[in-house]
Image (cartoon, rainbow, N blue to C red):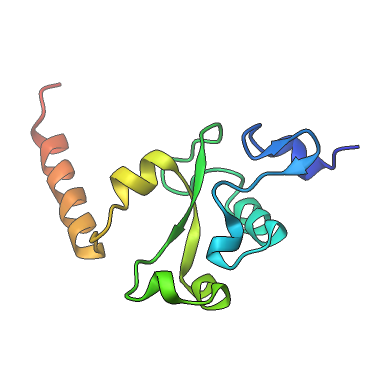
Length: 116
């Protein structure tokens, strides 16, 4: 019998009674349950676009030596679970808070002057 938690999960995350973390959770030093706990804590959705029924990936901070780190060290750099679009298009490698704030300011300037 499914618990209430599983009824809230997108079908791509939960299927046939088994937790299916996106990607290889072990590669990031996470157990399936740890991956699911992160996803549930985010409200079972992408924390950026707030969409629930997409394919999800494990987002991590890109740090030098990642591939040579043991999994328990990699776990420290996991930021969350994102949809593939937000992971590859919004939080691409090299994005900073300053760049994102600049993007917000740019869009706000457009909103202020766009035709109504």
